[in-house]
Length: 540
Image (cartoon, rainbow, N blue to C red; front, side):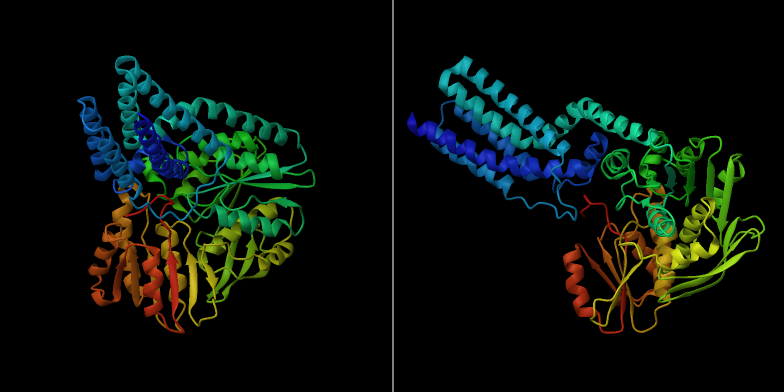
């Protein structure tokens, strides 16, 4: 009997090691999917090689058969050894490479504990049932069966834990939300600017912050802190009495989320940078995107000010129906209509110069390190906010000259190897991808190389957009590196439409392969554009 106890303890140890690894992996994926049960399930459907694959299913089936064999009186020792081997097979399965590491936040820790409680409950119940009906032999069978099921169904237990914790997490989040909202309400002196848009909102936030810091102490949240909980964290932890202006970036993946953020931050000024086909998988169609972004304008107070990019045809429609005070900016629209526009634009490999002109005809010469014409539109958004708050065009021009490139958004990097890198790896869409290629086209010192997995999360429009993207690439690039054979099929089709040379197309699966390939392809004078990065949990 002591041998049996020792074997049971050894099986438990192996099970613990294996299931801890798998649980941590699923916790990581759940975090990357925002702890959203629907999106977590969607991740599994697209990641069968890493989620619940044939090895996991086979190990569970054979494990159950081993438990049946044990019930029928077969050799306990060999069944225990066989069960450990099956568990180790699932432990040896390769994990998916993910660019963003697991962060053990309070919610992640609570979810981990919740999963452990649920798993422990299953083990306890099955072991007790086995003991009640079969004594120690029944206990061993129940214990082994629990090990097999909790390992095999690890994804589903994590999904159940996510779902079960939702009411508790909502209560915790509501506390953070209320605390942040009360802090905002107590700051009657604070100017809050809400910034949203399908793209350009993060760049516009940093651009606006640089300009406004010429005159006011401005709180600019880091990175893409644009969800309700992200904004709450910034307000609760970072908003200080000395801050005079708060720039609140507002992101959304579903209708109602901008309204939620607007109620939280209570902006007096609202900026919409663009309306485009991003997150169509969750929004359904672009009409829903327009309605969602417009929630910011609808949430402004009666004396609030709405700022629109009037070059965007979808935004033009929203601006024309807005009766609150509004400011229109643009480059290509009729200057007589615009409150602020850019003239005499000169775009080069080193940045851009332009004249900033208001409706009254006042102008100021400006220069910026930022690449691309579309970044001038983002600068116009920031300049519009500054003008509303009372800055002169000359003051705004000084701020514009100090704007630094935003990380991963057309960021020019010179690593000192003679090869220039344009890092535009943060999210791509049909407008920004074309703008990035326009920037790349301005470089003529060597080969123009693009590395891209294409655009994602565009719903039904994704394949057509990527095919068009492939056609644009063919017109600009001498070498093409595509990440993901299946993902990039529409781009390959677009390249074929332009009869692009097949020997100049390289298809790889991972960024590790990209680095090795670029080491062979690039020579001094070349410039390489990294266009878009796939979602954190993506792997083909």
